[in-house]
Image 1: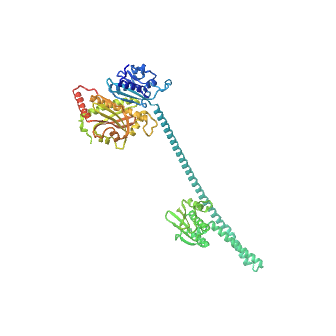
Image 2: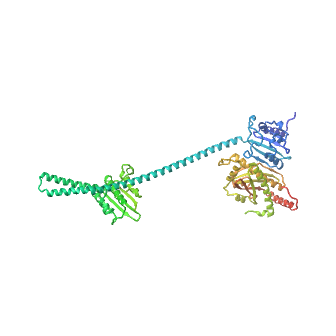
Image 3: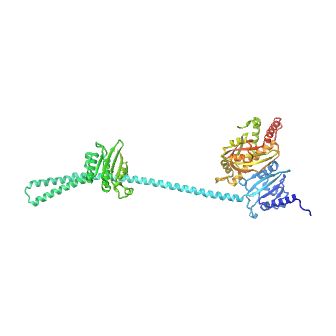
Length: 390
Length: 212
């Protein structure tokens, strides 16, 4: 028995390596007859090597005849053009199957056609299993799709939330406007009722009280000498009647300052402020127009009431020693500012429902289409600023 | 500067026509493969220095996809197909019908792109080897992504040699992409190349015709 030469040994090793490769290798000659059919191809085609060798590839795989792979194989054999046939552009190119073969699951494959150097030219068909890569990519894409869907969902939820918030804001705005209108209407109504009551007090009760006073005076004069007890009773009657008349006048003034309709807003404000300042012993600074202003009745009442309320607050809570009032107008708007040097007002107090006075001022100004601000004054004190269109 | 002067207008027109015929074949193959109308054309062909080719193809930092095949035989050349990265992704996704594109090119898309490049390059190489009437060993296509200069200079020593630059219009459906085929070759190849065109023209003028 002769020893194999070195090249025979290498060729044997080559054959063994080829047979054990984890990729499919087929080599065909220029007539497309199979020269190499490795173990991997045997396993995935179910065709034994002995059965395949020397037979034309298209008789082993009749489906190849005239197809794209066959065409590229011809180009490789005739022109020496190598080709890559990807799974993405060609599905199940060779009739090969996954393991076990019995399940007949077509194998996803990448095919390389590699012309081999030498004459005549042979071509190697190298087949790789693309299943794992495809599975990996399918999983990646599924995750990307889930991510995309969840992002879309998140986006639509955010949109919905923003939409709800907008609707809510709109509703709040609408209700606020309605409430302001209602508050304005109620204030106007209240002012009208007060004016009516004041008129009735003046016209009816005033007349009655005056008639009684005239009659009592007549009695005092006409009855001459009265017993001391009778004279004292009559005098007490007269004194009580005068107190009643004073009370009626104060109630009337509170309801509807007669000064306002008689002398206008400037004189009325001056009187109001002087009276309250005297009562509280405040130093007073007044910046009022020299002449009276031509304002609508509603606007005059609003200016009067806001000033009245601001002064009441200053007297009740501020412990102020100095108060200043500014009333100025231009062609378009009226500005009223009432400032004190008291302890000031903190944010919480200004917001608290108990401070109905502040809310009342605010609503009166809003009802006239104006703006209202409660400002802090340095180093301490409060400034009420109202601007209203004329 | 572009060195159009190395070919006279007749040689230039002839070569452009050769490549257009090759592109027609490649387009027919691709159309059949993806069942869509694919069109390929070579509006311009020129010889330029390698550095100029890099400038023409794009800014140095622009990322490109390339598919390269080597040509070895009685002269050596590297054939390269170069497309801008994002546009080539779009076009390959149209061809493989992917509904959910990922940000990066996937393995499958890379394989598909390699195959498309392989078809176009084989057509160009076939034209050249016919014209040069030479025997060549053609290498398998390899795919690479990088900047223009990395791609153009990465395979060969830094010689500023003449390269053959084909401007390519490639369109599928409503997608159009402009790319380049570049042949990097040695000096011997260039002179035999010009001689081969002249031989072809001579045969054509004498009415002998020529196979491509």
